[in-house]
Figure 1 (cartoon, helix red, strand yellow):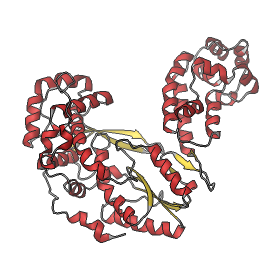
Figure 2: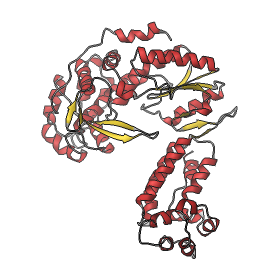
Figure 3: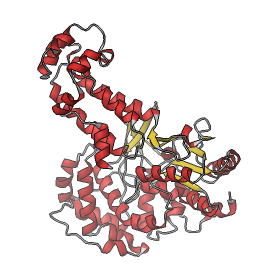
Figure 4: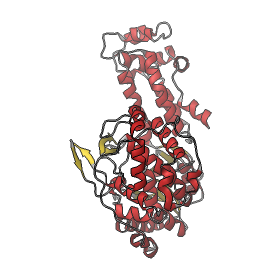
Length: 465
């Protein structure tokens, strides 16, 4: 890879270092729909006067409405989105003046760990509600400046772009004969972002030093861990509205170099695949990209998870390709396992409860999953899922487990066809084994479950397509 071209970013003359922000948020007042008429002038702002556009009435209105729609957990100060309006009504003038003066200091971030789909834990950083409002206002001003310059092969966290477009592009590249892939996995990308390198790239297009200082302070805001605040030297915390845009800014140089070399690729945030015609070409791409990411951007490549292989042996954003000359999109095995785990979790929570309540809780899970995987071409796994989810005895049996209610009674309470309760009541095996019993499939057909309100994954996908 061209090191001269890529290394220019590290010596950008516009890069400026700023001291870490200290202290708590100033008090502020709400910028709700009732107090902020819409305005679109912010999109045409000069980059040296961005802060005025950040605090403009129309921009703050949109930011406030987005934060309220997103809801989210409280930050380190304990304030909820419901409390935001009253809090800001009293203190918005002070907050606005500090932002315009370049004197605003974000509060610390609350650390939260969530399980990763592949195992292990991922740390999220939850900013305070006021900081989420300011980050959202910043994002709305910065996105029109940076996004038009991003690569057409970058799909993550961008307006009018999504994962479904990315996997469709993957399919097109392989159809065109690029039947080898260099699949790069970056270790804890969001936790390893170098602040200086990132700010150098932001400063290429942003000249307002108040905005640059504010972004730096957001990056360096401390993290509350076990009642104490820990300083951060690197990383952009997942959980704030600004982080995805900053990730795209940092990785845009990688996209540009791949384009300059004529490569076909898809990037969704830190998920990157490059499609080539041979294993040897894939290895060259893997070596050059790894060298740049590690030495120029100071990121870490997970050698164990990264590989040069056939596309149908690798997954991308939960999808996988078949090996045919005209490949088809199908489910990655891990996607199927994760859905089954989520369905089982709903069943477990519904034990001893209402059958209809279990179906009601399951419906948005299945609809959301079907919406995400609507690009799947292969019907077999979807038909299998519908068969699994609608296996006649599973829902009533699981709902009755570990309670004083018999399995037969649970089926009767679910308004099953006549005689089903007797059939269930005499079963000794577990619910997932019983789900395949032929007499129960006859007693409780799929159509009955659909009548009760169970969502068909295949049917939902067919409607969405």
